[in-house]
Image (tube, rainbow, N blue to C red; front, top):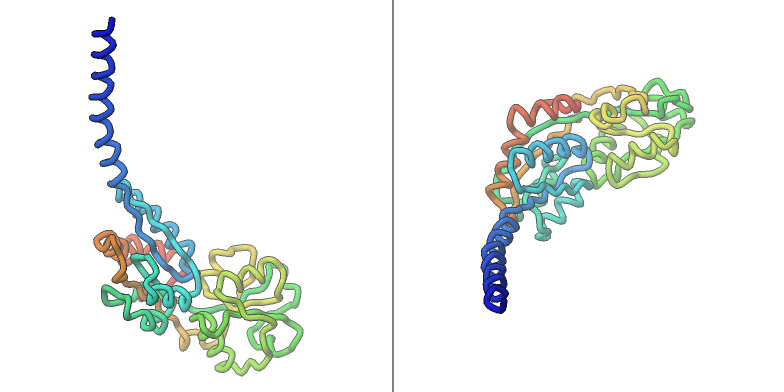
Length: 251
């Protein structure tokens, strides 16, 4: 009986010792890359991250969306991340000390004026912002969306001031869709994503204020090969199709 017990214990020990390395090995195969991306890329990069994970077993893409200025500052400060994608070249340039690769342009965007679907202020043109009857919102001037919006306001001689400025374009859109503002200046892609929740009004001269989106890998990346492959996906025909479908222009 004792002999049988000793044999059972020994066999169990061998089985456990055999399984332990396999479990450890399986865990070490799991890898994560962190992508810092402008908030206007939320929909497209979420879709591309899912495609990337499908093509790379055991790899997780962690997405962090925010104002480009905030993300560039975080990247330059050494925040643990692998890829940076901003909504303009100026903010990308501000993070150049952290870039491991030359930034590559992958999309363009223009701005539009949006109102809630029922358009309570009855706005039909961008110029009507000067009437004073519409409370509108825009991005802060440190964000690319704010810089472009400010340029359009000046270009089209809009002197009425916004009732508030938001940290990023998603926050501007939220103020409009939630009925907290009569109008907001957002990217075309945000209007497309909002669908029937908003009414879109063209802004004159947007072709003179096109914003360009660059992407680059970061020096602090611990998964540089995967980071490069994610950039390649964004630049590929597959990535460009996803961006096009969301309303982005070609770089």
